[in-house]
Length: 620
Image (cartoon, rainbow, N blue to C red):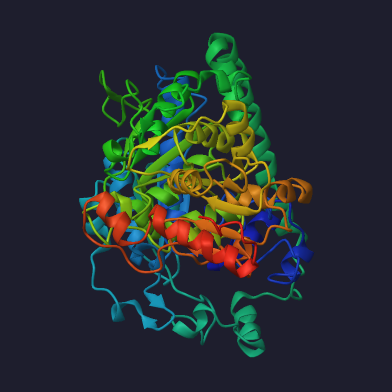
């Protein structure tokens, strides 16, 4: 894995030289529009690229997740074997920028705690950054830092001739694979832009082209007489031998896999199903039933759904950023994912203890999901999704099946106050392409949200509340169909003339307002819209059936920023939201203080009808 994604041409060159899906024209079109060699490696776009990288530190932390998933996979499907078909090593090439980013501190600590001896990071330590020498920004002893985090650390100094000591590097890499009990960091001393006579050891060479004169000087220093992009046939024949060696390794692995299939047929079948990301046909039947009138928070409902799903999906595992209890993410009886093998711990443990490390957790979730066979979720408070932002964005770019659980979704979390009360977060996350934000209104919608997220492709965030909500009396079949479509009618009326649209806990507020203003259920339709993204994917006919264009009197209700709802509300509509920060107060008082009341929603209904000139509220 190339964590320092700005060095992508090095990866593309190796893929070409070894015959791994790229040709010389791909190198000629580096960074060109629609080429297979973009400026940073993109998963799913270029053969041989295993994860999208570019934002520094993300590849490093993603690799930690990959190594975790591989350890978990072996613990789950082949726990008693010293040598296994599941034994794999994750290799990472990283840079000064990677180890400076804060995410690498979080991820490094996790790797050390989990004793990920299947992870080897080669740190290209050339002491140069864009602004100059690395001493401008750091005096840290990187080796000591990683040793303190539980890593095996070795340094490969420059050779006597001032070049990378490739022979020593080769020996240390082999030793790192054999090392047990710790991840390995190989600090490789190198010279930036070597062997360019005038550019090496300069910060300018970090991102700027060498220029024609320096290229000519470099070619002379290398003794090259070929034209650019003219690869010597003898060189190519030698490098392409890597493909033949790879084929032999694949044959050996396939033989081991066949032996595993014979000796462990049930586990092998389960692994194959998980690898194909196939869900049991009766998965819906495993969900808990939430009766109308039952009162519980959506975070609690999610916790019950997790227990039910875990019973039928052995590949489902998860955790929280030190918030398992408030997020309700613990899989009961699943044990802790830890290197210590015991009654409640081990590599097959289903509960990951991330500590207060949301950023590394987000990136590692991507790495876990890149290892086929895992269904992974992890939780934190919605306000702390900001710490995960870059990792979430990469999950959306790669369309990974990552499930984020974000609880404490509004000012209703109460006295922790404005630092913990999300306001702008829903709008911000909805602005991200390829990402689904799902905010269920009650326990039944929470169960439907979980099932739908598992059945759909790509990442999703399930946004959960802390306060108790009474389950609506909508039949389950309608709830499931409606959640899958992202929006549906939960209160139909004889002559719909006003639309009240809400998400999450505010659906209950909308229903309460409708009951007060329109007790005869004649004109005020209530719509639950748990997922804007899923609703926007529906055919125009369905969207029109839920939100008829002819009905201009509309009110949108959500205990968050109003930004992003104006297209649904329309020019005559009103938005009942919260466009200021929260406050420290008990939940009910905080909601009242920020206007999430029947009185405010009712006033908005009157205003939109007055604007439209409908007159339906003349007698109310």
